[in-house]
Length: 203
Length: 203
Length: 203
Image 1 (cartoon, each protein chain N blue to C red):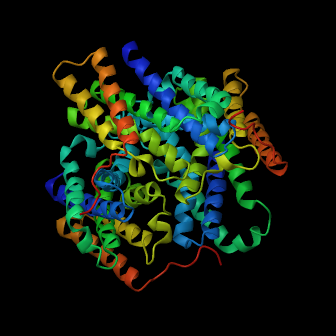
Image 2: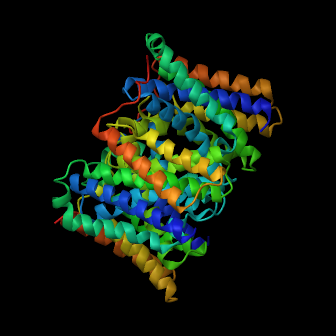
Image 3: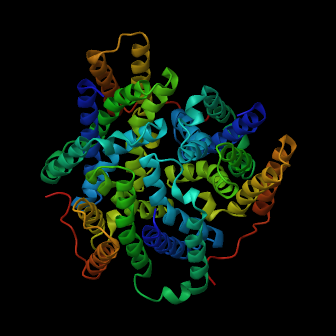
């Protein structure tokens, strides 16, 4: 993984870890619980992806640098949770940031491992939503992705699909990566604000 | 995997996916949630099996054809959920169909990967019940397998055990496969109707 | 894995399996549910570890001997649950025993597989707490590790860290293994009795 991929990936880990640590505060877990839940959420999607790709030990275990964002997140949340929680939907905002970045980096990692473009998009979605599903299942909630206000899976699918498409067309590069992540994040946040909903599951 | 194995496997994916999409309707998830939950349930058991077998990328990611049954299931449930839900236990019936087929195909895949007959039976059970456990855990329920009316794990064990046994004896073939699945399905449904229960867990 | 590693590992499986079967009794699952939940708890942490290590089929599937402790646990719980449940915190005591042993054996297995000492400690913690998290998630509870009375993750981290450290120093051996497990178990139990708590997750 090059530096240009590592930076958004670590940033995604950090955003998800903050969402996990904020949920830990809300549930009154202790500081260790905050660190552990943040770590699960931040690293869970990528570990799931790497286990499915079957390419050796997941990079989160191979590269100690992946442990830094969850520690940082737990420390920041420890000191500033009472401040940030005054803002509306702060947990969902960090979650959206992690999801946006992972929909891009998850798809890239799968493409690098030699997956075809369809399978890589799907693994990108798994990476993007996996950590959040783990967070909510472990905290004994129905996952965001099923009960979200606003759109959740659609932005993730869009991010993974655009990443696979631009790669296939040979247009993918660092600016494209950030642009796709920005679009995904914006779509998630706008849909959250305006409470857009996908159609119901039965007529 | 030969055609004769692929057909029951895809049918199992479809049955489980219908059970997932029906649960999504009951929980008022949206259409995307229905598709995602159906996909998790339909493909989850097989992905778990392939990850444990450590034989490369799970076939659900390798073969795009595995994505067709969950899409079909979500579409059918979208149009007909209000019809089928009038029937008693329709979700449990589809779940039983998936479980019956996967107890056979899961064991076969494990045998093909070189597992011994005991381990292959156990992996067959993991495949047969894994998707349903994922469905119920994600939807924040205690899994069927623990709170089922009627027998659940026993039919799955029977199906996996008979598949391993007939393979070992050299009697396994397409008719055997369908016969075992039919027995497993019938045992599950009859035990459900008559509320048979295994003995309690303590004296 | 040598005999000296196999014995504590199987004992850890047994302790966790008892905790799973006891929970099954409390939840009024049937005898098969008790066996299955005990098996999930006893073998789950190690399977998770081996899947992450990506070293072939998890040893629980390779070595049929790993199936003996869960069967034994379900049988013992069947006959003696009404006796042992009179004692306070009996489920938590068995859970602590499994966690203490797995924090040592999980780290050792990861070191044997060639992981560096940091990553091996983390995988040791995953092994030590994974089975219990699976137990509580499947039984639809918030995992022990987040809501425990007393310290839970800290003893697990200590056990894994000491195992990695003594290995690195070349001091590790059978007496060290049992001593570390005893310290971890004692710390967990003493902290449970005196309701020690880690600091809260926010200031």
